[in-house]
Image (cartoon, rainbow, N blue to C red; front, side):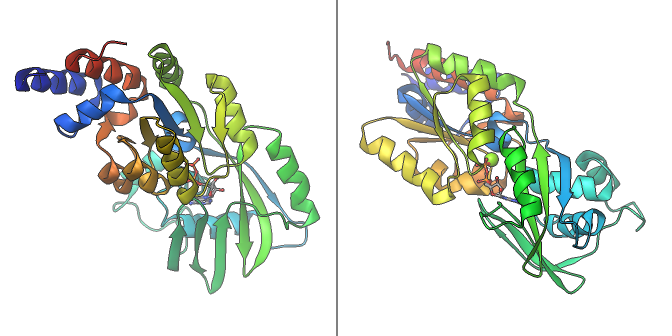
Length: 303
Ligand code: ADP
Ligand code: MG
């Protein structure tokens, strides 16, 4: 294609909500035949809300545990973290941002966290009011009271996270999300172009399967660490696939960087956007198929 045609295509992409980092990215876009899609914050809205809190009967209690969990999650960029903070303070994330700086400390204010650490694809930990608080993916050694709640959660679409205080399992928080309306169009568009959609998520099997079933995605990889996602991309490429990855989180950065083409959600983390060749402005995932079609048309690949 001529430089003029590339320029025009880049401009048309921007109109579609697809920001392309240079002509090589457009080149990469035309050839992809497989797209690995992250779930949380990519296929789903990322505006998560707390659906249920189950505390152990003889522990600190729901309210205290939620406050401690919210305090730690203040340091997190993850949609799960934002949902827990919102629930703990009793305001929505957007209201919180608007209020920050101007709002005086009141009943909605969470305690401060120190020694904060986030592990991508795993969870967060920190010290709050002298206690070590961890919010993370549930392990298989839960107290009986939480095992039932976990089993119930696994039958549904919510994502369960475990709260541990000073090493003791205190509560299970179930966080709900919805599929982005644009995801249906995005996945259908890809399929029509002969591009294979694959879902890869750090979340558990049940919520992963629920989202995949809604969208008609047959290939699902659940409980992936960030390394697993990157490994999956490597394997697919070794099989000869031309792989794009779409993601929003710190946990997606390695997979985005290792793909033939990395595509970041516009509302996602800086780590994801920095590792990507293409950014979907404002999370316009529905533009995915249009972008591939545009690249193919401009650069002349007929299939
Ligand atoms: P996804 O691939 O669906 O975006 P992640 O890889 O980011 O999911 O996270 C995988 C799992 O790690 C989550 O389902 C959750 O159990 C846990 N996790 C990640 N970040 C957090 C957090 N900030 N708070 C609690 N749990 C978290
Ligand atoms: Mg994500």
